[in-house]
Length: 146
Image (cartoon, rainbow, N blue to C red):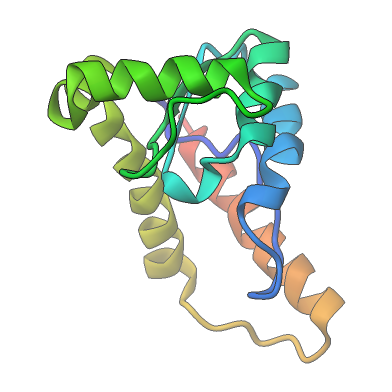
């Protein structure tokens, strides 16, 4: 999808790992679009996440850690992806999988911050989460104005 529309979002504090929210984000996104491939940084390089992709029939564009093992150890799909990137080399893998498009996500966050500001005015955690969610919902609405 080339629209820069936000398909899934999960707001958490710094104590929660990005990777732990992977399945929830996939499920949110699947409600709005068919997902063919996920592009994600190395924070999402876990066997659990590769197993989720395999079960859902979604291709992986997750950046693998440089020292990743080619042994299965609980995720044959991750093993396949690790071997592929090691055989092809990172630069070629990056081109083949359009990994550079992942930065569009960072551009969306930057746009939201430029439009609405980087600070949250709410005082409670639940109000702050609601405020941030509203910013992203309004951002999506702005994309769809004709």
